[in-house]
Image (tube, rainbow, N blue to C red):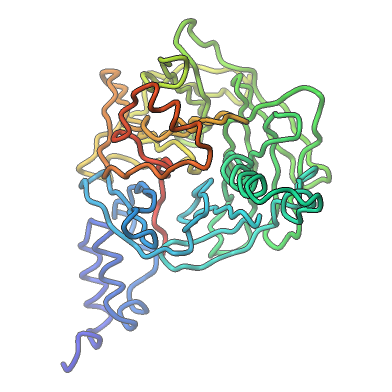
Length: 406
C-alpha cells in the first residue's frame, strides 16, 4: 500500500469503533480528506461525547480558543478568529450563537467554521439602530462605542437552537432585554428576515431559561413559573404550564433552569450565597423537581440517578455516566451565568464547578486561568481594587459548555 490515505474503509471503521475518546475520533477523521469521507460524521453511540468548556481568548493568541475537557483535564485549542470581539450567548447541538456589535447575530460551528446568519438585533422592537448605529444625533465616539459594547454583552441574555442546523430547518429562541428593563423572549425560524417577539405587557417579566422539548419551546421566569411559547401564530403567545414549585425558605438567591430526565420535564433550582455587598457569590446547592403533566404539580427528586447535567449559557445537555467510565453520575456541571440587567459591573467568571447529589458537595473545576481583559467601563476595576478581589480565580468572559459536532 503506497499511502495511509488508501486504507480500506472497512479497516478505518473498525479502528474508530474501538475508540472511546471523542478527541481521538475527530483527530482520526482529520488525518486526510479520504479518511474524512470514509469515517462517518456521527460516531458510534458508545463514544462518550462529554461537553467541553469554551474558554476566553488568550491574550497572547487571540485568534485561538481553548476547549477544556473536564474528563481528562486537558485543554484543546482551535483557531477561531471568527469569535474575536464577539460574545457567545448560547450553545446548541455543537453550534455557537454569536453576537457582534454591528449588530448581527449568527450561528458558528467551531469545528467546521460553518456560519449561518440570523436576523439582526435591529429587527427587535425599540432597538436603537438610528441613534447608536447610524449615529443620527452625532454623539461622541466614546458614547457610541460603549453603547455598542453594552448591547453586545447584555442585550441577549441567552439563545438556543431547536435542532441541529446542519441537518435541516431549525428555530432559535432568545431571551432579550426589553425597553422597560424586563427580559422577554423572541424567536425566528431558519430563513426568517426578522425576529418575532411575544406580546409585551406592563408587568415586568424576567425569563431565566428556555428549552426546546417535544416540539415546543418552554420558558421559566425568575419565580419558577413555567410556560410554553406558541410560535406558529403572529404575534407569538405564551401559555401557562405550571406554577413555581414549593421552595424551602432561607436557601439564598435562586436561579431556575429547565431540563429533561427520562423525557419528563425537570425544573432545576440553583442557590447562591452572596457576600461583600452582593458582588461575591458562590453556588452551594441545587434542587430538582419533576413535573406531573396530568396535574401540573411538582414533585421533588433526591437526585439524577446515573445522569450528568450541564447547565449554563448553553442549551440544556445531559449524558449518562454509564457511557463515560471516568465520570460519576448524579451530578450537575455548572458554569457562571450570573446576569444582572443594566448592571455596570461584571462580577461573573468564577462560580463554576460540579455539584454532587450524593453528599451535597461542590467541587470546583480547574480550567486554565486567563488574565481578565480590562472592561470597557473603568469603574469595574476601581471597585475590584477597593474590594481586594483575587483576579486569578476569575475567567472572563465566563466559559460556555459546547458539545463538539462535526
